[in-house]
Amino acid sequence: ASAAIGVTGLGVMGRNLARNFARNGYTVAVHNRSAGRTHALVEEFGHEGAFVPAESPAEFVAALERPRRLMIMVQAGAATDAVIGEFAPLLDAGDMIIDAGNAHYADTRRREAALRERGLHFVGTGVSGGEEGALHGPSIMVGGSAESYAVLGPMFEKVSAQVDGEPCAAYIGSDGAGHFVKMVHNGIEYADMQLIAEAYDLLRQVAGYTPGEIADVFRRWNEGRLGSYLVEITAEVLAHVDAETGAPFVDVVVDAAGQKGTGRWTVQTALDLASPVTAIAQATFARAASGQSELRAAYAGLPGGTRPKLSRTEAERFASQVEHALYASKVIAYDQGWKMIQDAAAEYGWKIDLGTVARIWRGGCIIRASFLDRIRAAYAADRDLVSLLGEMEFAMEITDAQVPWRETVSSAARRGVPVPAFSAALAHYDTLRAGRLPAALLQGQRDYFGAHTYGRTDRPGAFHTHWAAPGRPETTA
Ligand code: NDP
Image (tube, rainbow, N blue to C red; front, top):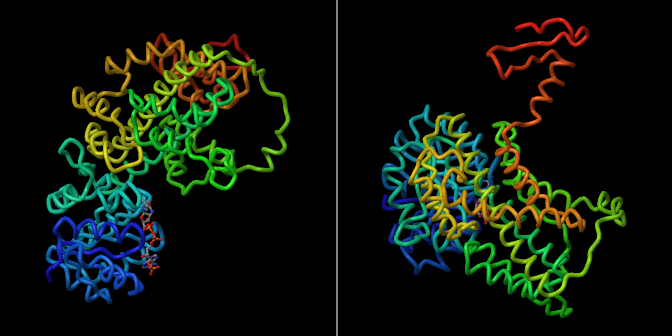
């Protein structure tokens, strides 16, 4: 046995992660259900490092140093269960199974509990960064036991992306915490992408800019506080011209967005946790709505707002308002994601360091951005920060953004340009800052039709009003 780690499942991600470990000096055992991929990897990339190809599960397990570290990189769900079922019986107490696929955190919790009973460490690990990240350095969010991280941590930290000399890999918390945080990363990614798309739509429909001009606006924004991988690639996509037609690329693409499901998981889970991730939810629903072709046809042609043409100066002024709106909405969307992690940590007993989450998303993953340094600093200054808006600089920026943010959302409404994520972010902000909410009226309604009771502002207890005879004194439940 000579391999420091083994990777089974040599598809797009598994193959590149195996190469990444080998390029970093680790001996890597490689295995795939169908041996063709195993041999192809060694033939093509064998010169990059030390690989031990294995045809059978027994051969694969025998190649691993103890405690064995076996990484599974197959489709989430049934395939992952099948592979665990195949390998777990071949392992001994203290060995580690790392699931680096995009598993649902609830599955990870279930698998961890079952394997713990057999003395095995199950390490649910979120890996972000796609194919390129897997090869050159992903962001790695590790769950499972602290004991297993003591062994695996140095390896993950070596192969992960590095930013300012720090690794984008860290221990997140027990059982499903790593996969949970990866899921929320993807939810935030949905929100960030949708907000950028709405900003583009406004610049096009309201300011009247061409895609090429909007690419320049995003390039400029990318130099400032919005600087991020997503803004950078947005500029490139918008500047791209379709070779066949000579039209802007964005105009030849069908406007129905796909999704693989992690955004949906975030929203479903948020409902269970009663965590109001409204910008993430709107972003997910916006993708769903874009694909509802029949429904869109039924609404098509209905009246929208008015669209007066803006002068060049007015357009420039509008674009700078949109920058404020985009930034403020982004802060809210990220704040929603971080709060959701806090809510889950309370529910599942995870001790998650929120600053560390920001640190390991600065590189390797899709939402990497300079902005994350600030989030990290905010949580470093106060580990128990409930909201980013509790930090002074963020609060000041949101204060500065007030007028342009509201102007942007109201212009969009007047002109009939859909901005579901911008609107949700602003409504979230207004909901939480309001001194008093109409939830009081909801409580009255609920008590009226269902005797659900309500609390009173002037004394403790649960009360019910006799609605059929409102003059009678309320009763205490
Ligand atoms: P691929 O489709 O490229 O590869 C899938 C691999 O899983 C193949 O090696 C396949 O083996 C193996 N496999 C599938 N079913 C079984 C089974 N029942 N038993 C044994 N092996 C099986 O997938 P990816 O590499 O893209 O994705 C792998 C995981 O990584 C997924 O969980 C995905 O969500 C996650 N992920 C993907 C990212 C991406 O950008 N692609 C980013 C981050 C995570 P065979 O060759 O025999 O078919």
